[in-house]
Length: 169
Image 1: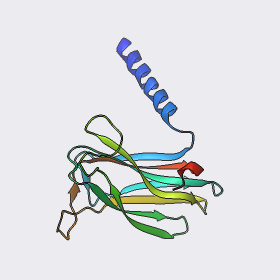
Image 2: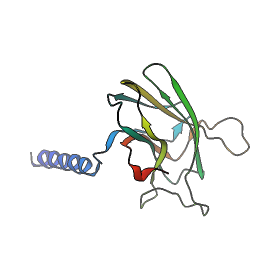
Image 3: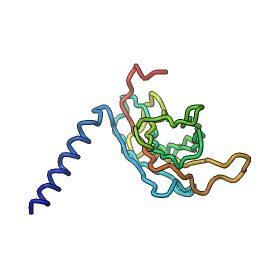
Image 4: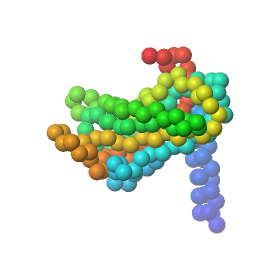
């Protein structure tokens, strides 16, 4: 009985800490996890219900990688599907490591978390469900065919935050 109480108290404490660490300006945040790398055929899909067509938002991809990641950059293909059927597709490249090979991002262990800009100062023009997808588009040097599985990527997430003027670049 004591162990159940301890487990329950621990879970409540973790929920409290997680909620306290999240910004009130975060509108949406979700993560997809991959046990053995990020397979090409697995698109990280996020469905976002939008009811605010007044405020502006910044969209970020949150990528977590470990030491098994063998590249200094990351190519992805991302798309936003609007409620009316309109689709915007982007091919993006992000730097993941410094020239000396050290990974960028936050974290003290071999796992690094990177918050990567996707869209800045976005105003959602329609109420409804938006679908935001991201898939990896990496290939080995000199190869035309993409990698079937991108080792070292453990989590892919999306966060949407209220736009702040100091974020303007």
